[in-house]
Image 1 (cartoon, helix red, strand yellow):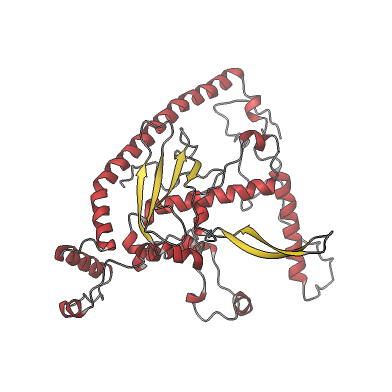
Image 2 (image 1 turned 90 degrees about the vertical axis):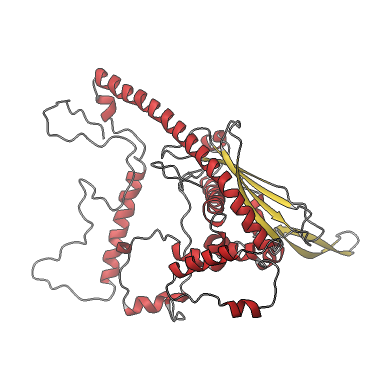
Length: 422
């Protein structure tokens, strides 16, 4: 695919596509016609046979797979265009890279300053979080002004909202705090609801608070920490469980911080209460004595509390040397991306908007990443195949937002064009 097109400032010839061009199966491919079936000879009438359309679609799919397979092998490889440039032009290209190095340095400085701004506003917000915790725990009662402000916001969100009357409030039985506040809030998050089991829920009923903090500016790498505080419970000894997210020192190609690794607290489980394991009783027979015995074996199982044992990123050398096969590497990537996304959602959504997740209001603002143009109406047959038991749109499960792309996950929630205030 090399090309030796001469450099001419007045030429209208478009330079060939250089290296590292992403593969896009929607783009037209130069030099290839649309897959077709053989032409029908003159005088013959096409026979209407059931399955012709499927055969045509199959031929098109086979051709597309062949084209994608060939192009996939070229992605990331040089087209020869850059190598064919005159030396003086190559030197100028290198100079542009040198200019970009300074741009990257400024971007690093910008993101660090944004992080300091987030820390500043978190400090300003912390007294409000403490007030929230006091009301949830029942150590303090809400003021009339706070209730009135909440009523006004509810009316703004929903014009048909009916405020709580004073008579209702007076007749209501006294209650301390808000029971199971954080468990309810977590379960109303689409992603977290998928990993909280019924067994987890019993332990999470003792969750008292979730807090955010940032790593000190003196640390070599930036990052943040999520702290879970628990009341004494039947499952573990810890009163505090923490999850720390560490970023890489330099921002990634997209201009955002890049997830480097996660660090979790070791949970001190009480006897037979480890929610991350399932226990199985097996009967074994001794080959020599023919005696039998019962053996109790533990197997890993899905649990919210696996969150505190984050996946470990593979070593670069192991990846480059091929010590990790493609399937295993892909599985690790998915786990890292999911782990990072949960941390970001706790930091950016659940902690600052806890009451909206408790009430379910936050679900109204969940951004779906599908474009309406990507959908088309289904035929009656397709609708039947979709779900014969589904009676309404409410039966269709909500789809969780896709995790950030990249081997270690980029901090995509931070807009590189503006500093977010925490």
